[in-house]
Picture (cartoon, rainbow, N blue to C red):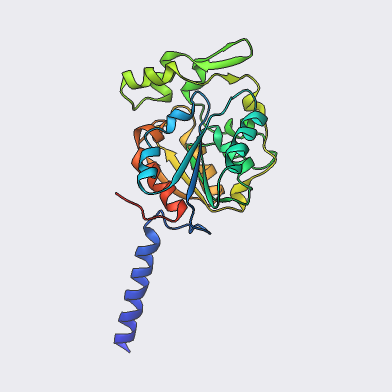
Length: 259
């Protein structure tokens, strides 16, 4: 009897230990994907994925980075749909920042096998994301928005110190020079779909984010029941922590995660 009791206790301890260990494999992708489509956010362009792309390509994945016009939510959704139409099978759809809205809208495509959110918006269908975000601390980057001619961009100080604060200043300033200017109406848009409700999802939280509240990111990740990692990163973890972001994408694609 004592032996059985000891075995039961040992089994319970092992189960508790495994449950306490977060893992990128916690959410199993429904299909192994050969394709990855990367969608950039506001104040950026497709080259913001340049540190992640070679890692995924070396792993044997076919990778495409969307170039969002940022002129309207509908235009960005259309740009992503055009790229998804070119994929030849199961595809992991990845969105950074604002692009979380785009992948939530387009991720219902049957080709999309999994979703990866990187410090990203993830509204429910029809949800007022601005009202939701207002319930959380306001990050300082928003004070650096400069509006002109119906479009907006971050000023240099906000971009370098708040948007890309963990990059070397020279690198941050180079990204500032190519940032995408966004339509003044872009953030007022609402999604009609919430693909994360039906697709396996991953979420990378930026613990030092000064563009999106980390508390908001945690709320979104928990709400979608995503496999989650937290990184000591600014908003641009895809540039400052490319290996960790690539590992999430590899896990979502059903590939071995490399260190």
